[in-house]
Length: 429
Ligand code: SDX
Image 1 (tube, helix red, strand yellow):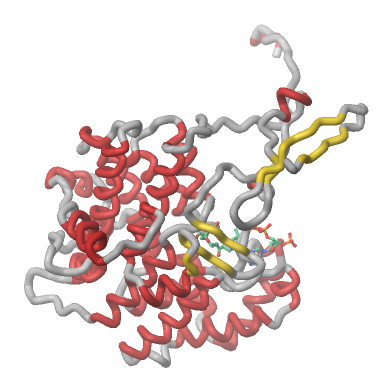
Image 2 (image 1 turned 90 degrees about the horizontal axis):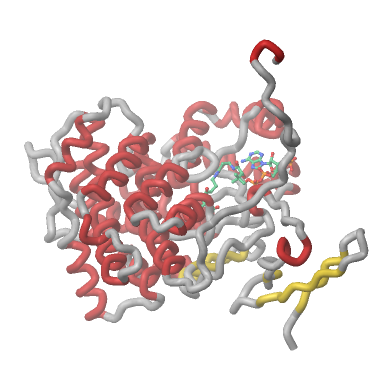
């Protein structure tokens, strides 16, 4: 029997709507006919109770602390797969077999170089520009270089654009870093894996050979996996909304990067590390927690809380384990910031203010400590997030373009401004 929802309005009218069910998770009330039937809108700033689309890519159960990419738990993917396998999964819906993986890796590897004229875009930025500002500019500029993959109605164009973006983001991120420290750009090395290649482009210098540390490469590869996709978060919704107008994929990803930059979203890992550095010592944790609980202070416990996870973010647990591995590999297990983070987490998780509001560490709480230990500067943390999330943005964008139900996104509003009135001559205003 088809499920229905009935809305009784105080003026006596009764409106009925279909209730749609997914494969797992909450049902949705299909309210597309609400305005046509009832002349009213729904009101949901921040979209707390609104599903913007149907998707088969990622599923989150915030209460159970569950995160599935195409049905696979993030814990299993982070343990048994590498980032490019996860990219293949997110884009195609299934994990690749050996032959498929080889073909995918080969294609990505041979798209890692950027047009040499792209280098000039970096020269227009100040050396101390925030790397995310550079990323927004340079990724948006890719639209000017790839006219042969901008027809979003052509699945082949979309596929080429996907490969280009996934393959070139590490190169562009590394270039943004090199530019900021005044070192020469390092070209991709096709003999290396995706993540080893990225680390070499970030840290190699022409003056000496760069030795890849497999433990550190594996840790960063896992960080990419943990950040690859996350349902309809703010930046993914930005990419979908931009794409709904028919904008080209490079412009849509640039819009996603801009949104991710915000400290309430992808910028939180940078803010979380700066928070730990400002607390400085475990003895100061109590004083900071007090401020974070006082709304008038404007201070928040960065890396804590989540719109969906009302229990532990499964990515935070995996990130904490990765932290241990990297710090041990580097002989930094006494890293004061890591010890401070563990102390802060323990105190917060025993404090009723955070527990009652279901505020737990999220993916950003430990990621800054790991990245800092890997030699990645704080200013680059969100660029790393953007690098990893590009595959999720592309997969979601692709799904939207292929969705027969998709229309240009155009929300309405609750208008609270002035009613109609006439312009008065300036001497009578
Ligand atoms: C990411 O959406 C995604 O999936 C995002 C992401 C992804 O992978 O794409 O997971 C990545 O963005 C993770 C979140 C990173 N952001 C931070 O760590 C910044 C700190 N966190 C918060 O600003 C906040 O928790 C949000 C933005 C993450 C969620 O905000 P909500 O769901 O809108 O919750 P809220 O702001 O309404 O807070 C609910 C209550 C409030 O108190 P009351 O009004 O109920 O008394 O909790 C308080 C808030 O004041 N609160 C915090 C807090 N987060 C919420 N108090 C102190 N410290 C915090 N971190």
